[in-house]
Length: 231
Image (cartoon, rainbow, N blue to C red):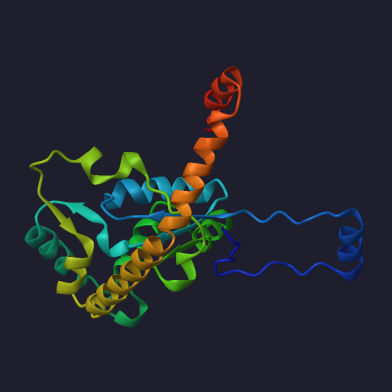
């Protein structure tokens, strides 16, 4: 996964320091970005885990925020959100609170409320988080995506528990880009499927080659390799 600096700039090293690093072969520490796929995750549980990891210094990019779920029926959550939309500063509404409609911004606001955002530590943690609807092009080829098992819906809710998909809720309160995101996701999945089918013969050839190579290795060596997960 390549490194992306999310919303803040790093101090540029001096020429002397850069030359010293080049001579010694020293590389500056660049923490990798963790890409989290939030499809079928519970909003609060996922936000809590992400907030904790941000405070530990991780850089996190979350995708498919429109597939996040919330407990309760859709009409119940819609009424609660409409009540939230009424909250404003009477003397000057332009000063806030600001009501976000996009699922990614709703998730960012949820994480923000779990961070000490009025301290430098909390502000730095929040700048290390990026959220997207769908899976944009600049993230597709950045490596594998991970999930948060303890925040997944099937591990948190019973089967009969009603839940709301965040994208559907946001569509009812003013989010206008659900169709565009859906079309982009359909195109991405079709392209990925085409590439998967194109490389099927190569994967099959590698699989048979590995199987043939393992058959030539001594039995006790195979057991050792299996023990360490190399086969």
